[in-house]
Amino acid sequence: MRVIETQQLTKRFGGTLAVDELTFSVEAGQVFGFLGPNGSGKTTTIGMLLGIITPTSGAFRLLGEQNARGLRRARLKVGATLETANFYPYLSGWDNLRLVANIKGARHARIEAALHHVGLFDRRADRFRGYSLGMKQRLAIAATLLGDPELIILDEPMNGLDPEGMREIRELIAQLASEGKTIFLSSHLLNEVERSCTHVAILKRGQIVRQASVRELITGGSAVCIGSDGDAEQLVRLALEYPGTHSAERDGNDVVVRLADGDAGSLNRFLAEQGCYVSKLVPVETTLEDAFMDLTGAKSADPVQ
Amino acid sequence: MRLAVLVRSESIKTFRRPAFAVTVAALVALLLLTFGAMHVRSAVGGRGGSPALPNAWANILNLADLPGVFAAILIILLVASEFSWRTARQNVIDGLTKGEFFAAKLCLVPAVALGLYFALIATGVAFALPGMGGNHVDALVRPVDAMQMGGAALECLGIATIGFFCGIVVQSPGPAAGVFLLYMVVDQILESVLQGAGDVAGAVGSSLPWGTFTRLGKRVQYDPGALAQAIGRTGPTGPVHMTTRSTAALVVLAAVYIVAIVSLSYLIFRKRDL
Image 1 (cartoon, rainbow over the protein chains, first blue to last red):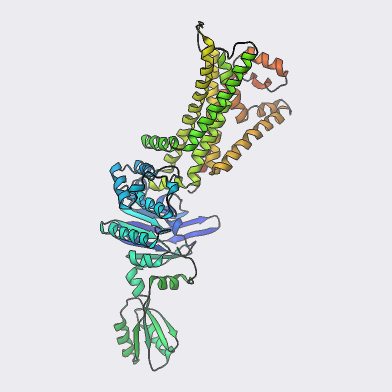
Image 2: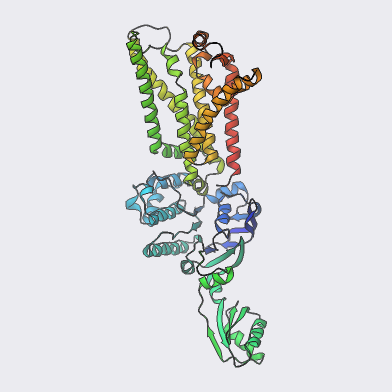
């Protein structure tokens, strides 16, 4: 079942096209990473899904619902936090969750369970304004859990967390995923996304430039570095003729071939059939960050979200 | 529309908000000072302190501007903060519709306005009761008092609605309060300027929202004797000469303003992204 499905979703703010005919889908049970540089349209897209931003055109389904009444029902089964933890600063953590539970129709027992889940039960009586950044993030996650959601949307959930806090959130995400919940995660911490997510979509200037499983993206990117005694340009041409090649670029006398299917053996056989025997075939270690930089054209120093 | 959910949420948010307690305390303190000063002045003048009910109603209800302005400021704090804290957005994310969120905030207008209005009445009556002693009166509330009571309540509601509009449109408490106070001044300046510019302009000037709402709470609107006294003090061209408009017309105009302000607030709110 598709829990999120967008079709040519578009949002224009005046003359600025923030989201450009976005079409993607998220299947139930996935831990889905939503990545892109600053201003690529991630928050706007999430805002449209959550009903706080009105799309200019296009359509979307949330938990299979499309019309206004259905979407309202669906949103009660979604736990979400956008950008920062938004709570009433003068209320305690407990009272803030009481308000959320009141809206979602959740029982008070769930507040206690959610606070235990994120390790804030002992600080439940403290005012939100007195919480550290990490505690605020945890309270936001606790709030998303209140309605026993089928879909959890987390925007930068690891912001402000120390390494131990990040590990706890990562474990929490894994636990929620193991309970069958779908997680939609926007984060600029690419290594955390790589460790937590099963699938990702990468945005650039309001458009999806790639949607794939994390495994596919990593292994299907810079897969192998090949070399031969012959002409490197000839090797590039032949590598590009291989049907499973995503891209092939010369790197000195070698050629870096990114494979869509990740099957380096088939590439080797193909080259041999063409009369080109490689003298070197080395797997290239790639990360999600490498793939992200390749796809978005971002430099390493660029902030990404 | 889940009214019980909305009322429960707004109750928690409002009663736990320090600004609520501070505003109510400040209003009550100001009223105590005002009524206290009236009492002392009356006692020093040899009139034996504050007048008793029902004569005290005129003095009490003439102060309805105060709870109206305090209600507007409090509503601005309660409404505009939801945008600056981004809790309005989070409420919608959590499952309220935009219409429900607006309705929840709108419920605050009568609740706060009438709540502070009753604080005025309670404080004023507390000063008026001792003066009654064992004296027999035919009625504690005469028809003219009841009419002024209704008008003063509508005045508070109207002024609070202007505060609501400022909170919804400006979406930041400080600037919204500034816009509200500026409007108060500009409306009165505009009214006095228009009154000197011919009959039609004068009629328009006296029909502006602030003047319409505040006129409803004043004794001169309901009591010809009080009007004659006021004209005697200020002269026929003084600030009270326009109170000859019928009360029914003022009530209708005030109701139209309240509905128009709320409708405009909703249209602006609905159109905006959170």
